[in-house]
Length: 167
View 1 (spheres, rainbow, N blue to C red):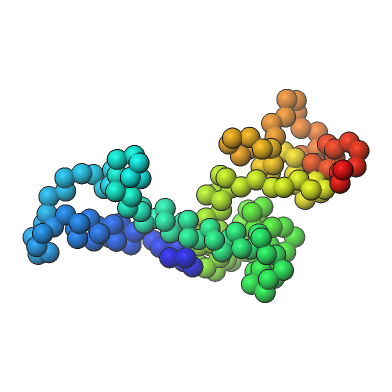
View 2 (tube, rainbow, N blue to C red):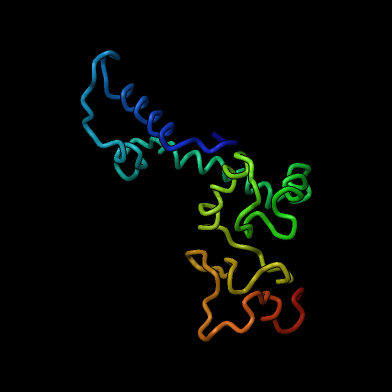
């Protein structure tokens, strides 16, 4: 589950097996489902038992290799995948790859989930696109919103800075 994206049908079958084990007293007989599966998957603080939605858990596990590609761009795996899929970009900025493997497609399935909460450190501001990347520290991660029409769509945050960025 941490290397390949499971098909939705497989996730549903696994959830069904778990629910059948949970509710039936005798395995050949069908048990009574007293509570919806979605309610069981809620956190304990919200009134559930804390079961995992299999597909969501699969996506969360696939986020780890993607995060490692971003955090450690000089690792052997990152260098190999960069040469194959994202030569002039980063994995989080990549839109579509040419003839991707199922492993790469699986890793990239976690990209929308990762982009929901990721923010970038500004440092010099060279690598951060002002209008596209999440870099503003607010409650919900979001890119900057221009008030007027964007003159330079690929402008970096460094272009917005005044003075010495290291100070």
